[in-house]
Image 1 (cartoon, rainbow, N blue to C red):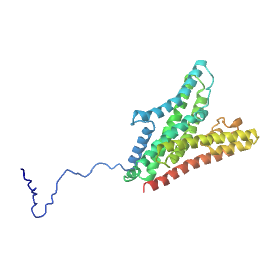
Image 2: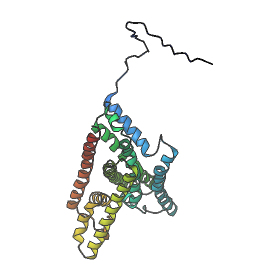
Image 3: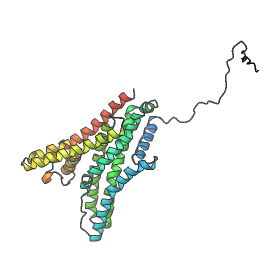
Image 4: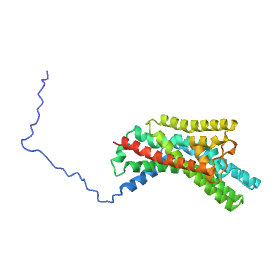
Length: 305
């Protein structure tokens, strides 16, 4: 029968057993690129992410599909203009984004939460601020990235129209002027929509809630404003139509471009704002852009604590 033997433990010799091991740590002697480089890197990464670049194939499907949907109607218009030798394009450059506003709103709803909600959900925002980057740098990078992505989405079909107009041998000066006006319009639209989308998406870490909230704000506001404008026209209160347009992002852009860029208004009866009313529209647009940036900075100062 086996007899269990007691386990013998070695007793360390008395005295200090401390050892210092050289495991190869070295100090960093290279360049320290600082805040500006970190901000540019965050901007580049966020812009690429807005189109799914550097991410899974699944993440590329929706933004690329929406980009194609934005450009295909412009290509069809160009083909028709060239084939029929038309004297002008069927749609003005400033009108194209208004017509396609549903696609633009869907893009904002899908990509604004993707840009900020994941950082909130996985609590990575404080990690950004542990580096040289600051709150304002983070907000500027995210805001600029989404606005740039929106500008690419809205300016690409205008470029298709412009190239097609030149191929159709339409008047160069008129087409260049219209193209420039269209670029100004979509620049304002990109800044406004990006700010509103990011503010809404930054409220919740849940991407699904963010998407639903952005869609609701964009579509409900436009539907409500359009309905009220139609009612005002039916009751012969045409003077109220421009002021009602102040309460929707889409109609705000419509009002600015119809007042200052020579665009035809999509308001009922084509009753756009006058120059004086257009000043109010422009101030509201710029105020919303500035307010969106300020709200984002205050929001992320709290998150980064």
